[in-house]
Length: 152
Image (cartoon, rainbow, N blue to C red; front, top):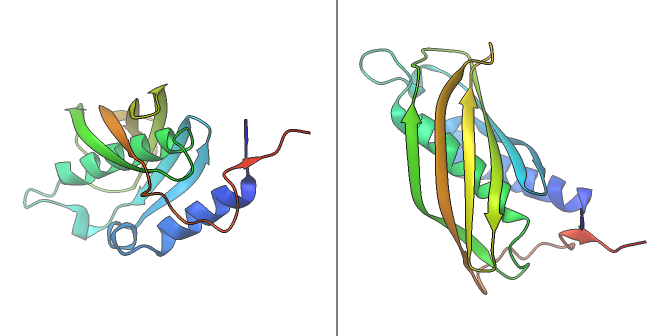
């Protein structure tokens, strides 16, 4: 299966223009079959009272990267939700750009399992997490093009 680049661009634009990713200064940087990269440009709104990036920001990155890593394998008419998320916070940070790399480990028709790692600009591993995701038949996006290109 070869993902349709036009579909990937459509999804990236959809995420870019959605209210929550805008609030978080978060973007879907790349998406392929079984992988996704999500980036956040940190600012003062991401900090907790002690001046560190809030754990919820890191959880959002893990949640989003695992979601988009698993997304391409679900049926076209289905939506997707995270049903659990587990995180290990390994190092704190106060500023910069965060990058989450998501990988789908197991993709099923109803349940998928993915992991993500969050890095800073120096490639230091800050957070590792996993998520179980559930496909929701009939709740998919109504994209104007197919997810995959037809085989040659």
